[in-house]
Length: 548
Image 1 (tube, one colour):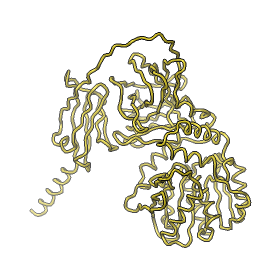
Image 2 (cartoon, rainbow, N blue to C red):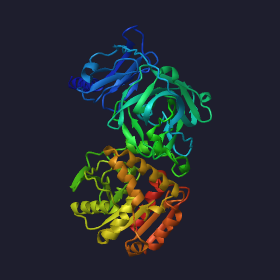
Image 3 (cartoon, rainbow, N blue to C red):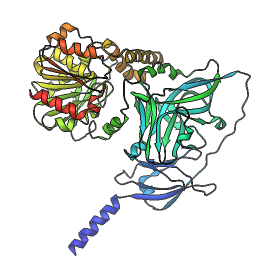
Image 4 (cartoon, helix red, strand yellow):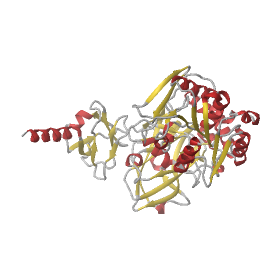
């Protein structure tokens, strides 16, 4: 009897915790099911899409009962109720109210409107945003968006999506949304009708799928966003072309929108506008086509990094309070200390393929650089690699460490070099990956693109984008390490770069030559993203170098 009671308790506990709720969404007016409705938890990254008959099933296990379940679809009023209330009734019917459409008188003004195209037009196959349902379902069901800023009232005629490759066993169902802007992020969907498309390969002409939305009568002015979301799983993969160093936006269901500064999806629109009208965001698009081949498709690695525990591990993560910053770091393993420093606009999570291996033999201390990741910066001063190096030294002192090893990737490598110059007695060995000693060591195409990006940010003069501007500026202004200074570094240094790195080959070779105790390794067929692309080889090289 005791065993039966125990079994009953286990089953009861499982039943209480596994809150799988099913139902169907209907239109209240005509009592017909509404297909492809988003059902999720507000401010959370989980959710489902109803099927073509409006049916859904969502697992709310472990979700705070006070949180809100949110249901939305264009043309209907949003539905919101607490998880607790929503979970009470299974196999439920949910009725949505249709939005009341206010038809306003339109006054025609005699003004010549012209056709223009705005947005990201690149058709590159080197930088892409990948849509792969087999990778992770929650990522696949996310949404991506691009920002526009119309100086004049404009009518959207077509929404274009540049598709580098398409593989699917059936038509791919997509939804388009158009959002207002709030605090620099997408906010409310302005569409009063659902815009969904079943995309086939035959609909893609010369690498572009063009959706005619002229009859929807969509007028915009000021800042707005166009978003796309894939609604049903399929066997295959779609690669959307992307532009380097344009800002895109991503979110998972009703989670917060996040900026992605590395690349933006190739969404562009055909509009009717006054001849003097322009999309202010287009000023940032210059020369992205010239960057083709410099940076590969790393979306797979970005998603893997996002889904790892690193950079958000509350069990090991800590903050060190310094002037104008709370410096975030995580520690793994035991042994000789090894500090990991990420690249520009990155974070700890980008070492997700290094930390598990290196922490088996070393005490790995991974740091979010000031103003990046979880580390803050409340000052309005320009960033410098010397300041970043001082932050590393402050953490070394806080942890009571006499000497450390440093592995720095890109900007992290630049910081490592500054640390070697300023605090040589506290450094054992240094590994730099894709580092440079002065800005001109970077490929001219990338350098010129960054100059354009900075000019746009300065012209926009948006206080909310100060951090972004500082991160671009540091790459244009720094580092400034002379050959004579490099010659003063007496610590052993392993200089690593890719054969196809954004850092010029001759620059990397010069660095290794000027540092007295340096070794050089150029990874064949590799790019600037060696920690992503060549993790096993890199981990092996780091461990062998540190053990010498």
